[in-house]
Structures are given as structure tokens and as C-alpha cells.
Length: 617
Image 1 (cartoon, helix red, strand yellow):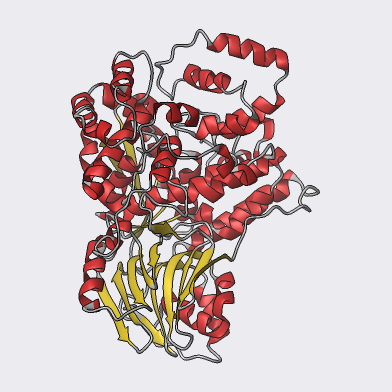
Image 2 (cartoon, helix red, strand yellow):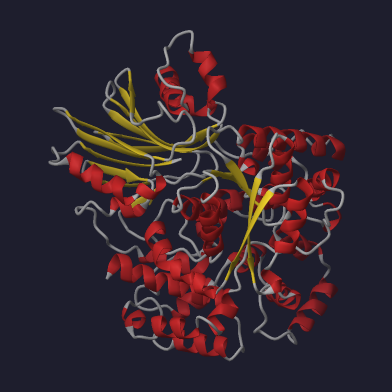
């Protein structure tokens, strides 16, 4: 795993390219502390510099980048797990000087041009400078595991693995995109292609970009789609096929020339991955878990059960409220506001893991692929309840207090009931949002109230179709929230994380499984639970789902109370024109007095304020 960066100019020659690309890659040296490399070239038509920072995982001796072949040069971040298979098909025509997947990708591009992306199975972002054609090609993996940001203006183009590397270039403006800030306050993340800066964009997942004298061209090369012929297969077929694809995916992701481990939360997904890793390893695997003092957020007893079952070398770490001291580092690495507080435990589990191994497998992707989220169940039930039951639950919810922790079952019932009167599209948005977008417009400051973000931003992607709701999470929630969280938190600690449940072949198959098998007997992850029960009979598949959350509401009311108040009420936030004066004070007061639970939204404001101070002030 690595960090990449580049600068390309068609408009004028750029002086000191070596110095500029050095500054950019130094900023992301944590992504690749083992090696660095550069490619710089001036021609009559362009100036180009490519930079690379390497975390050595495969071919430790000859894996130096950039690699140049047939006047094409690549810088690459990621892992392509089927590169040996692709290489065999190319060896009759091409000679290879390394054992890396990097050279295989470049050679496959030379052979097939843009069609080469269809062969790649893995996670990646890379740039290839094709001197023969005089253009630069950028690409990201199908699901969006590896990030890529870019800037383009007046014939000048730059890209990097993290926003902070782009901001090392003085001529890139830091103009705030308040439309994105509004989306952030609503969703907790900024959906692609936007970022918090007006002139910096995210390359969408499953897309490639070509930049030439004519401008930039972006195109998707893969789309998650439904197979219509799977309704005739039995439950046993889907279980066996899922198990086969998952075992294959885990096996592929255990290819490395360095030690591996596994994140083990004790939940369905990570337990499955750890058990399948242990089955394929001749030695005890290393497992790593994070817990909290608050029991409703602590799964350590479950992770220990799995670790004992597979006989792993198990390591645990308890996160406390002072863990928020790493926020400044997270703000810098994300480069834009990011409201998912589970980035904090992800950072710490990555930190302790990196002390033992360079690669860890995770269970990310199971909730999307096999219907594990509570909101999927809520949406299904809300569409199938009769009018009388809806009336009863809405009446009952009025007696539930507003200040309960989100993990509380009554709090979930209230959240569910409050959305029952809404149209299906708005209802789902209610469940995935930090704050209602209409309320945000009402309390927004001068910059927010002028924005025009409405639900129609997603209208063509979301409807009553359950598959489209599922696909929404693949299109936005995964690549804009879950995957950036894991990438940033792990790479900040020089750790590569691989997710078998995000293998695109497994994802395609899972997306084609009829809902009656993924959500059987109103049970999410039905198929994964059946497989896990077979592999570990003693596992309690009926226990309550925890999720990888943080007791942020409790922290803000207690240990972080003074920190939050001082940060948000020093007057600076009002002047930014984001929220109207007095709104934050009221939210804090209601939260501190336990009259409401605004923990997640207040955390989003904390992160936003720290980001403003770091990148704007």
C-alpha cells in the first residue's frame, strides 16, 4: 500500500517540479515509509512529475516505483490480487523485470489500453503517464477502497492520495465549498465528486479519468447491477456459493511477503474473516480488538470467544474519552470534515495492529452485501406494516424520551416512528442523516441558507426498490464514509487493510441474491449467519448487533464537556456563517441537561471547527 501524487501542466512549464513533488509526497510519507521514488519530465508540450511513497508488501526487493515501460510510467497504490493470473496471459509477449502487481497493471494497460481495468481484481488507485499519447490516465477500484483527489484548472492538473498533499501546492486555491459543508452537516460526509474545497474533486469509484490538452474526461467502467435469473436457485445454492467466494476472497488477500493479521470485533463479519484466515494458515493468526468501558459499546468478550476458538494470538485495547486527542491528526489526514466518530477506534486498532503486522484483514462490506444494517430492516418493516400498527407505534413513541443513547432499543423505536409519516425517500434519509436537512436550512447561517441542496440530489438513485436502497450505500455510504475512514485511519499508521467482503465478484453475487434469502425471517445477514454457525457452532448468531460505534454522546456530556463547550462557543463558529448564533448553545444545553441526544451532530461540529482552523483560518 502506498501514497501517490502528481503534477501535470499543458499551459506552461513549471519550475522546480522536483521540489514540488517532493513536498507533496513528504506530506503523505506515512502511507509509505519504506521507500520513495520520482519521475520528472519536461517536453515541448508539457511538464510532468509523478511521486510515490511505498509501504512494501509484495516483492520487497524489486518493487520500487515509479515503473516505466514502453514510454509509459505508473505510480500505484493498492493491491491487485489476481496479478499472477493476468501476468501469465502477458508473458508470451512481454518481458517482466519485477515480481510486482504494479508492472503487471502497467503492461496490461500497454496491451489493452482503457479496457485493461476490466481484468483487475482488487483495491487500487493509480496514474499512468502515456508519453506516446501525451496524456495521463487515473483510475480507482470498483468499490472505492483507495482514494484519489485531483485539481484541474486552465491546463494545470494535480492529484494525490490525500487532500493535504494537494494543498502543498501554493497555486491551489483553498476556497470553501459551502454546498459541501451543508451536505456534510446533513449526511456526516461529503459525497463525491465534491470535497470541502471548490476546486478539488474526488475521482468516483469504478471510474477512470484521462487528462490531455483537450481537458479532462471521466468515465465509469463498472456498475453494480442485478441479475434477474437467480430466483430459481435454492437457499442451499446461495449459502454454498457465498461460502466458496468468501473462502477464495480471503485466500487471495492472504498473499503477502510480510506478516498478516485480522481486525476482530466479535461481530458476524470480522469473525467469519478471522475463522477463514485461521483455516488457511499453518500458524496461529494475529487478531486485534478494540473495546470501550461502556458495556453497550463493548464487544471484547465476543471477540475473545472467537479468538479462543481459532487459537489466535489475540491483542486487545480499551479506548477512553481522551482518545479524542488524535483528532488533530485525523483532521489533517482526512483533509475535509468527516463526522464518523468510529474513525477514532479504527485509528487505535490500526495503531496497535501496526506494531505486529503490516497487513490486516477486516470485515468491512458485510452489512451492505448481506443486509445487516438496522435501517434496512426498518425500511422493510415500514413498507409492510398495516395502518393500525403504524398508528399504535407512533402513539407509543410519543412517550419515549428524546435523550436516550442511540444504542437504546427505545431510542431506535422512537427514531423509527418519527419517520413513519414521511414519504419513503424522506424516511430513508431521516435514518441515514445526522440532522434533518430542512431543519439545517432553518438554522443555517448566511453561507448555508443560500445553498440549494435538496433530496433530488439522490432521486435517480433511491426509490421504493430495496435493491436501489442497497445500491445507494454502495454508491455513496461505503466509498464516502466507511472506506475513507478505514483508509485514513490505517494508512496514518502505515498499515494496509484488506476487505474480503468487498471483492467485486462476491459483491456482484451478493447483490443478485433474492431478498428472501438475505433477509429471511426478518433476520439480516441470514446467509452469513448460516455459514458462521456451520464454522463455529458455539457462536450466538441471535445476539444483538453492536456496530463499531463510539459512546460519543456520553463522552461529550462528561469527559469532553469542557473541551466541546470551549471549542464551539468561543464565538468563532458564529462568524463563519455556518449555523445561526445561539443554535449551538441551545444544542449543547439540551444535550448536557440530557433533554435530547445530539452527540453525533455535536461531534460533527467539533470536527468541522477543527478543520476550519486547520485548513481555512
